[in-house]
Length: 251
Ligand SMILES: Nc1ncnc2c1ncn2[C@@H]1O[C@H](COP(=O)(O)OP(=O)(O)O)[C@@H](O)[C@H]1O
Ligand SMILES: [Mg+2]
Image (cartoon, rainbow, N blue to C red):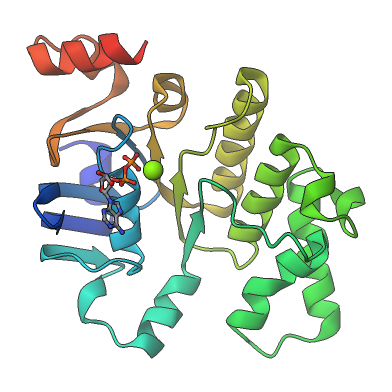
């Protein structure tokens, strides 16, 4: 029994299927994430990575299979309880999903207005300040997303994802579109904030460097299934021809 076996499972996906017409995107996918673990789902473009995490947060509904998040079956939840659980799940979208017409402050306040907890103006201001300090960008508070570089927008996206202190964060391609140095900085920042707030995560990526740096466990999404699973070092040494070919094509 390894260390993670004794820890609570925060996400458990079993036999997940999702098709669009006759495009069988997920075709019996399994995955478990223990508390405090970072699981990387590696897959090529179009393999179903975004579809997978959209199913996890209930933005898409699976055709069959189960998705349990913190013990709740997502597809059976009513809107109200889904909203409650969504507060515990942060989602960093590939494009950051910042609102262009809102300032950084307004973008950061947005999740709090959506999931209203009766915070006072002072409490909201303090959370915004903490979120911006976490990502090293307090001076951008009154700027618009268009005035920021790609790396800064990603940091603001991360700040907004973390502002309600989620237990779980799902990252969709966190380094795509960034230059390698900025990408590395974002990954370092993600990992240090995860540690600070004891976050469990699924990191979706097609970048094996990201997988190497972040994943306690790597899952290879191939043919709609969890084709291979293990540590980075285990998978890179795999003798399975498809896993070998997969890693070679990703270099
Ligand atoms: N809403 C949708 N309607 C139809 N097809 C979709 C939809 N979303 C995704 N797909 C298809 O599902 C497949 C996987 O997409 P996606 O999960 O976005 O891939 P990626 O691994 O690059 O994130 C693609 O073939 C895509 O065209
Ligand atoms: Mg995607």
